[in-house]
Image (cartoon, rainbow, N blue to C red; front, top):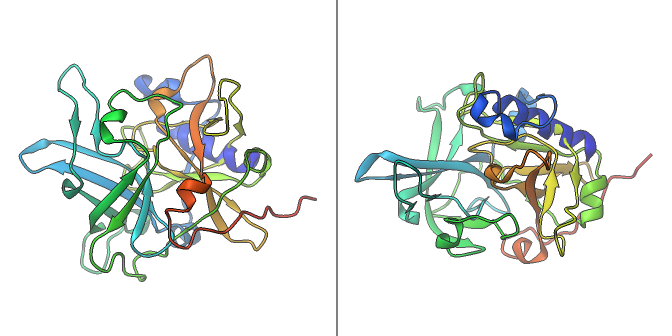
Length: 283
């Protein structure tokens, strides 16, 4: 877990090179693009992209992942929610203004010439109503499970990834964890490319009354929310055990960002995900 989370840290460190994002970089930035084999394995990691047909300048995207089956996507609960800024009022994108995108590997294109394939979203279940994320808090559950329209994603485009539940102790001790996500507004990082961050540590937050969230010793910035934390189970399969939440919560005195584990409640909402995590044997 520590090595994997270190990977996660590297990924996020690359993303935070600009001065405005520096607070979200923790330690050395060792994020990197995925290898060809990793691109094939994690092709189901894509983006949830939202825009407003009445305003071409109003859009939003975050990391989302095909999980459970070919019709289910997991992302953060604050997807499509833009808090107020100095330039605009808060805005919540309706689900019908959002879509799930799977990108071709290594900045390439699919056979039809497009860099990504689009899939309409039929419905969304969030941990909280979207209005609750206008003023986001670290201890608020931050997940959403999306159902794609029609037949969902063709298996040839991406294989769905597996979600498992792990105890906080297993999450903290797992040595081979890593984060895969997309990142925006980072010098030298393509926002349309999947990035891996290995060897990043997870630790409990003393302020948490339960294991609803944890502190994540890796770098984050806009776009990485919803990115999944993977590990290998006892069979050698890569499974998702948790996810990154809002990078805006990073505090310099914490030297950490925030993440959340997959709880039994969330796992129960994802088809085919009701399997416990069995850690790989330790030497």
